[in-house]
Amino acid sequence: MGRTGEDAAVQYLQRSLGWSIVDRNWRCQAGELDIIARDGMTLVLVEVRTRWSSTCDEALASVDERKQHQLRRVAGWYLGGAAESMDVRIDVVGVAWRDGVLQDLVHVRSACLM
Image 1 (tube, helix red, strand yellow):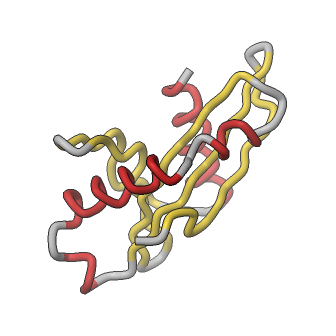
Image 2 (cartoon, rainbow, N blue to C red):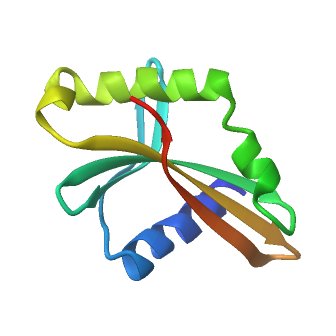
């Protein structure tokens, strides 16, 4: 399910927004970044949350304070000290599937402050 949601998010980011995908599923000891993309000159770290539902409400709600803290830690590992010299943000994409069909996709920009 997660991979299906990530694939839908990548298609949306590339086709609808024209973003470049830098990397996917980057891992370190602190966790994982689902998608790393470029929005113009901004590096965007994208968390994708997928649920079997008709709306993205539950998927987006799952990015609670604990998950946001983890995303900031993983971002720190990925960026090292480079975050101060570039524009970086963390976005969340919620994806809802039902009966094998994409029902909803919601993109929240700057969902987690660095």
